[in-house]
Length: 387
Image (cartoon, rainbow, N blue to C red; front, side):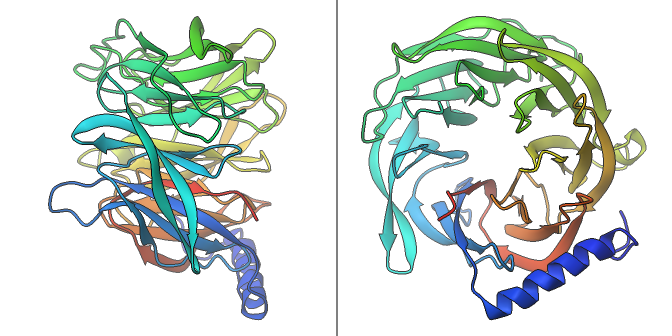
């Protein structure tokens, strides 16, 4: 843990102070913040929440309930239509849900468009393709990937395919005895979908048949044995992939060949040292993000309750440690970087809060802004499009 002020963090504080002063003069642009949550019996959350972030001064409004929904963990937006998608349970059945975004006075709400059963347990993650023609989900418990066509208005049509992953690396007992698909997302050119599978120690690659809403096995990227790949992100240049290994608390950088749809590992780096992990009751990695400028990568460490910042070598995609910053909360299952690259929002699931950090766009360091809002059991922070 670094002191609040260091010779390097003074630069971030200067940037923050300038933005705060500017924010007092001009309101600046605001961007939507959608918050997915867990809804345990007797818990605080009732569904999906909405807030606004002022990108000039980093002020985050108090989240308000936008739609009542059971277990709306992870969220994604349609790339064109005014629709938000969520995982969840409808009438007790694990489903994918489409919600129309409505403006209500000064805020926004969500109106149910439709829902579709998954048919293989609950989804851990979901994503549309880049054209908004299909929705793809990853089922952790079922160890599967599913694909659903999307109607012109964004409604989810019945599932067109379910692919069950097979095997397990068995390096980590109980966690890797079977497949556990954990995340899904498209390639920059929309030709492939990628599914990190914690149980297999692989990133499974599928070729996308957009016309028929089908996926065909294409290959895989190999994670370190026992790493437990959870989430991944592309570098803005499309040449590198960064995979977060949940079980090992590490990040593996891959070189990506877009023409062949192949990824090859080039480096694995720890997010928390072994000596520090041993002091905690339990630790696991949760989320990874790449800064819009491509210079930095950030990952979250649950239990250790920090975010690790790395610099990116633009020549080969290798990472180097910058710092580990406390999240000012408990169990950061998710965080996100706003579209301007100025602010990082860290969600503490067990502390029921979202904390705001300023990002120094030269050094990559984070500075806590002393801003924090109440948010019930947040596990997904999703930014809307810039106005």
